[in-house]
Image (cartoon, rainbow over all chains, first blue to last red; front, side):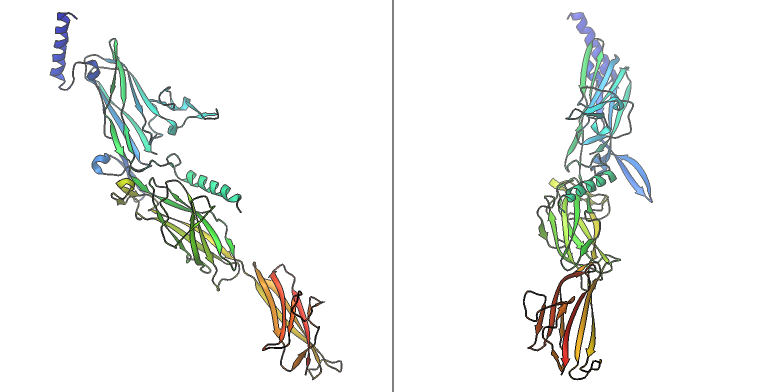
Length: 165
Length: 323
C-alpha cells in the first residue's frame, strides 16, 4: 500500500464518520443487520371477536407457550457508500418454532438444514425408507432472502411468522 | 379384550391429534429459550462479506392443558361384580405435571348412581394398574404421554335392568385450574411461569354402565286328589304342588335355589320330588334336589344354577298328604 492510498482510505473513513455516527469504514460494518425483539401475536377474544395485537413479551410479560404465534423481524440497512450486491440473508428457524403458513413468497426455504433452498411447494422430504412426500411448513429448517442489491442508504425489514411447537 | 384395546387407543389418539392443531402436539418443553440470529452475505465491489445480526430470544413458558377421553365408548354391562370403565388422560401441556383424578358417579340424568370402588392408573398401557384414592393426584405426567385410568364401579340395589348410569372422570392440574390465560407465576417446571390453557387446566370424560340384571319369577300352583277321586281338601287327600321358575331381564341370575316349606298338617310323600318331569332323590346328593324332613323348616330345596331369559322355565313338583 502506498502512502497516497492510505490517505484516501483515511479520508473516506472520516467522511463516513461524519455522516453515520456508528458506522466504521469497513464494508462489513457498513451494512447493518439487526434482529428486532421477537413479537407475540396476542389474541384477545371479546364477545366472540378475536383481536390481534403484536406485543413484545419481554415488556408486556405476555406468556409465550406452545401454539403462540411469533413474529420475527430482522432490519437491514446499508450505511456504506457502495451498494451491497447479491445480498443474501439466511435465518435458521429455531427448533422450537414452526414456520407459520402465512408469509410465503418473499423468501425461499430449506427443509434440509440449509443445503438447498427453494419455494416450499417445490421441495420434497425423503424419509428413512426412501419414500418422498411434499414438504410442509413444519419441515422448514432455514429461511433465505435474496436481494439483488441494497443501495447505499437503503433499508428494509425481513419478516417471518412462526408458531411455537 | 386385550388385542382390540391398543387399536382403539391408537384411533382415539389420532382423533385428538386431528381435532387439535397437530403440528405442535409435541409441545416445546417449558423453559426452552427460542433464540435466533440472521446472517447476511453480500459483495461490495470485489470483496464478499458476511455479517451476523444480534441474537434475539424469547423463553417458552409452561402451558397447563389436559384432556380426558373415555376408551369405554359403549355402556359396560354391570351386574353383581364391579364394572370397569377405562379412560385416557393426556397431559397436553408442555411441562411435567400431576393431575388429580376424580370419578363422579352422580351425573345429571342418571337412572341410578353407581358406587365408585377404586380409581386406578396405568402408565404402561394398561398392563399394570396402581390404585389411587378417588380425588388423589397422579404422579407427574410427561407431556403428550397418555396414561390409562380405570374406574371400578358397582351397582346400587335400586338399579333396574337395562338402565344406564354415567361416570365422569375429571383430571385437574394440581398447579391450578381456572380461566384460560390465568397466570400461575413461577409455578411451572424449573420455576418458569405457568399459564392455564384452553382446557382451563382440567379435562373431563364420561363413560357409562348399563345395569344387566335378571329377575326370577316363581309361580306356585296346587292340585288336589282326594281318596274319593275328587278334588276336595280332606284328610288323606294328596296335594301336588307345582313351582315354575323363569328368568327375565338382560342379565343372568347365578346360583338360583328354589326352596318351599311343607305346609302345616301335611306329610311329604317320599320320592315325589321332580324337576322338569325327572325324579330327584330326596337325599342331599349329586342331583339338584334335597328334601329336609326335620328341623325348623321342613321342605324341599332345588338348585337351578344360573338362569337368564333364554333359559327354559324350570318346573318343580312334589306331593304332600293332608294329615
